[in-house]
Length: 97
Image (tube, rainbow, N blue to C red; front, side):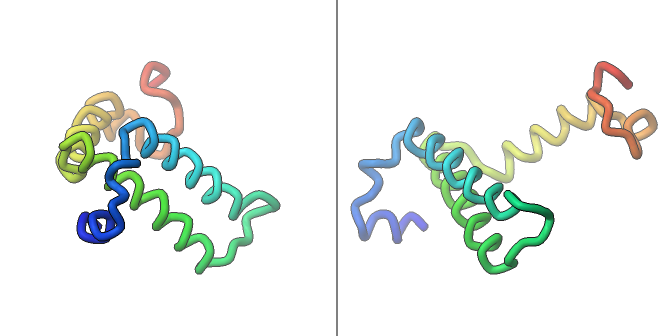
């Protein structure tokens, strides 16, 4: 992805703010796949999901964080808030468990 962006000289446009905006915009397009019900076109959904993931990875790179590391760190914090014995099969917020 870095080579793709560099070849096109797009990094100049990839401020954290612009990338965050792009994530939100593309997430809206992803949600649009379900606008009129649960049926969806798999290829269109894949394309929109790829767009969201691409911008997320570009933002992580731009702010110099490792995506795997930040996801694992967040999972550890979430696991502490939602212990299996209290949260299994429930959608309650952690302060309601």
